[in-house]
Amino acid sequence: MSLVRLKIKGISYSQTQNGAYALILNEVEGDRKLPIVIGAFEAQSIAIALEKEIKPPRPLTHDLFKNFADRFDIVIKQVIIHKLVDGVFYSSIICERDKIEEIIDARTSDAIALALRFNAPIFTYKTILDKAGIFLKFSSKEKEKDESDDSIMVDEILQEGETVEINPGSKDMYLELSLEELYTELDKAVASEDYEKAAKLRDEISKRK
Image 1 (cartoon, rainbow, N blue to C red):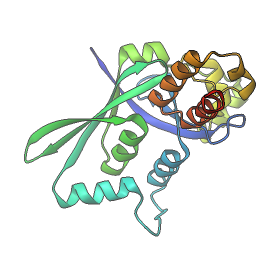
Image 2: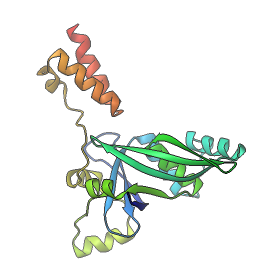
Image 3: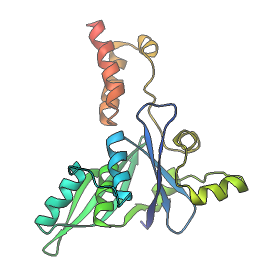
């Protein structure tokens, strides 16, 4: 399968979903964008790595990993977003130490935060980009603005993209679900690391016990 190199286009904040950010990746030799929903901490870590002049007073977790890797001569060679299942992206970090390569599984947001710190390239497979990549539609004025502004509204991307996003839902929605269905939804929420939704589901399950 052929690999497609990606670059970071920007990070956007959702106006409708509290704490939701979208990391926008752009294919280097093309116009398709790959939007990935990430958490606030990862968004902050990636933003700090992008802004070279910003230095946090204490090292963030990804900075600590970089310092640790440097101390033990571990280098990240590249990051590959290798799988997309139910809207969740899976990534691998290709590391090297003493000319020996190792592959480590990682969340995509963590992998990209580290790739930035190691100046490592980011890739995905063409099949994933074909499935989840989107073309943003702009008018001429908007296109000119986009060229100078990396920020793209996450809500528009989530509406246009093929990426499946799990809706946290409301408590009223959960009232209609059976106990078995609630447990199923809880398993899905934990698997997709949607802990806000998982907490709401646990509350509803506790009420019925």
